[in-house]
Image 1 (cartoon, rainbow, N blue to C red):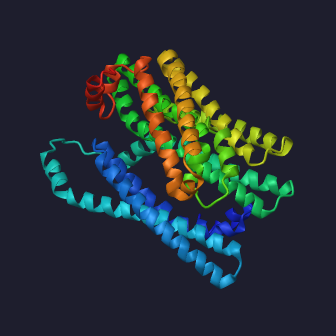
Image 2 (cartoon, helix red, strand yellow):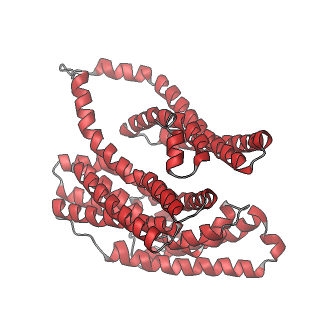
Image 3 (tube, rainbow, N blue to C red):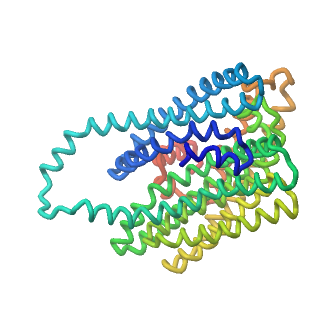
Amino acid sequence: MLWFGADLFAELIKMPLSRFALKTLAPTVWIMAYLGVLRGYFQGTGSMVPTAVSQILEQIVNAVVSVAAAGALFHAGASMSGHKDYSYALGAAGGTIGTGAGALTALIFFICLTAGGNRERRALVLQDRTRRRESYRRLMYILTITVLPIVISSGIYNCSNVVDNYLFGQGMARLGYKEEVIATSLGALGQYQLLFNIPVAVSNALSSSLIPALSRSVSNRNRQEKLERIGTSIRFSLLVGIPAAVGITALARPVCNLLFISEDNSMLIRLSMAGSLAVVFYSLSTVTNAILQGLNHMELPIRHAVAALIIHVGVLEVFLMVFKLGIYSLVFANIIFAFVMCVLNGRAIARHTRYRQEIRKTFVLPSICALIMGGVSYGVYRLIYGVLPDRLMKGRLGMAVVVLPSVAAAIVVYGLLLIRLHALDEKELKGMPGGRKLVRLLKKIRVL
């Protein structure tokens, strides 16, 4: 569909030349299907190491091939057509080739890993004393009724970007804007989404690990464990999401200029500051989706996603066509979409588990710590920017000199404040990855 429908999809979003990138992305969809299954298999056995290694390999290959292919195709487009738009379109296609190459590398890694474990699996088969063997028909039925609601929910949840691109392209065209303006605005939006997706990825990882553990506590009828897992997952997602949102707001200018050094980032900086709140709501909505799925209420995230998408579309049309907010319409509509999901999911969790969300340690204290952290990090950024001469502030290395100390100061201040204000205690720290070592270090320096 993506390969043969690329021309149609490109016309619908009013960016005809994006067909090149869509076609080069099509094989990646196929590759990712197999890669997702193999990653899921190893995660299901309790091993996250193969997933972590494959993701590192994937990103290294993605970065190298993306840069090389984008550069090669950009120059090829310039020599063939002499039109800069074709050069940019082919350059974007080169970038999507890198995405596919990274995914293919990870898939090959998993194929080798799976083949290497054949002897182990054969030994397990020989040890199996189960007399009854389920048919493939039965297995397919179980898989379908388990997976289909999650797939539909995720599809609706993520198709908002496709709907956004279509509505934005059509709306801006009706308002009289040219294709170049639409493409530039959507390009800045893509860079903004790249920024806020980094902290949201932590919630995605948390969600993946949450569902099996939560399902286990539900099947064991262990209400205490169930409520603890719900509370911990929500708290952890906000402990990451809230400071990330504050950090993106406080350090929007230096971070954007570091990541996208050769561009005019004024629109991206404004988008990042205006839309930083999306990090909190998307993190929370992702985790609450997983909680409902783990509680065996698979259909609820689907209903909530449909309701949120309908509200999202209505808000987007009003912001775009009535208030004429341009690309900011998409940012604000996305925030409202995630907020509606959070509210609906939260009400459903409370109704089905009689769970009451703790407020002080989950919302209030992390927000206070994050605001103080934001002020400190911004102060460090302004101090470095004011002290160092302008000639040292040029290029990626110059921006790194500004950003890295500011981020380091933010991490230290936020962590210390969480402990000092008792937003995190020793037991909770020990439950985190690497928490026992961290507790020993904090006791050594007399912070804990």
